[in-house]
Length: 81
Image (tube, one colour):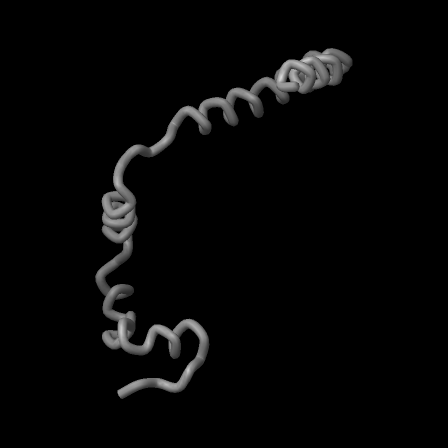
């Protein structure tokens, strides 16, 4: 099955102009490169890295009662006090 797909792709690309073939090749190379670059770090390390890019003043805007009132902030449920 995968060979059939590759052959179909090849047949379709083959009729394109050289410039169009180059564009298709760039797209394919980008897809292959992205599929090979799997981040093997634990999710908490990725989250930590992302959180470091958020300015401190933005963190201060977050509610301090988020663990108790997450349903309020996510779904509009009444606040718990």
